[in-house]
Length: 365
Image (tube, rainbow, N blue to C red):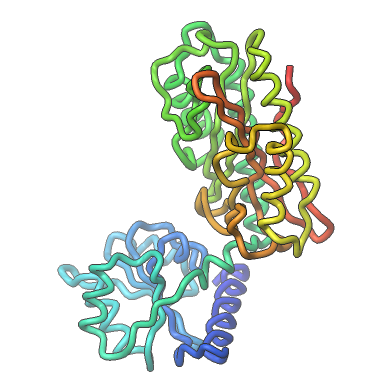
C-alpha cells in the first residue's frame, strides 16, 4: 500500500480510537465506509461499486467481478473481497462484518441510503451506530500529493480558460463555451469537468447557478464564467467575468466591490481563524457598500475529491481554518434584470497564512 494511503488509514484508525475512548463512547472502533469519495481517499479505488470495512487491525474492500483487475492495480496493499455473482452488496457486507470482525460498527449516516441501512440493520447481529464526517474531517486537510494534484487541476483549468477566451467569436453561445471547456480540458489531460460550467451572458449572470443556454456572448458586454476540471480525481473551481465592451455603471460598481471583498477575505486567511469570521470579512465589505442582501450565498467551500467538501465557509460555520485546507473564496453580488458578479479563486491555507493557487487576471478592464 502506498505510503500516503497508509498514512490516511492510520489517521482514520486514530480517529476511531479517539472516538471510542472519548466522553461519548461508541464502544467500537470498526467503521463501514460506503461513500465512494471516502473509499477512494482511503484506498485509491476509483470504481463505481464498493464498500470498505476498517478496524484497528484489519481492513477489507468489497466489490464485484468487474473490478478484480482494477483492485489489484489500484489497491495492491489492501485485501479485496469479490462478491459472488448474484450476491447482493449488502449480504457481502453483513457476512464480512460477522465473519471477519468483532463487535459493532459505525456507519456513515450522511451518505448511506436509508433502504440500505434498513437491510443492513436487519441482517447484522450487532449494532450499527451512525456517525458523521469522520473521514470527511480528515479529507479537509490535504496532504502533499493532494495539493499537487489540485495545483495541476487549477493549472489546466486556467490554460483552458485562456484558450477559450481566444477561441470565442461573434456567434459563440453559452452552451458552446460550456462544451468547449470540457473538450479542451480533456485534451489537456483532465478527467472532465468537476461540475457543469456556468456560462451566463448579461442579465443571466444574476442567476448564481444559471445553466447555459443559446444566448450569444455578443448580446451583452459581460459574461460570467464559473468553471472547474478534475485532474486524477481532484477538482478546481474558478469564476471570472469576461468583459468585452462598455458596461453599465452599476455593473462596474458591483464588480469593484466584489473584488475588494474577495481580496479582503483572502488577505485575512490564517490558521486557527474562525471560519465564520472569514465569511464576515467579505460580507461586511459588501454590506457597507449597500449590497448586503445581494450577496446571497456563502463565501466558499473546500475542494478536493468533490467539488463541494469541507470546510463550508459561511456565517453558520463552527470550525476553524487549518493548515492544508484548500478552499474557494467567491463573494458575489447579483442584481436581477441587470446582471451579477462573482469572483472566485482557489486558496491553500498555509502555516503562515495563505497561498492563492490560481492567478487568472481579474482587475476590471
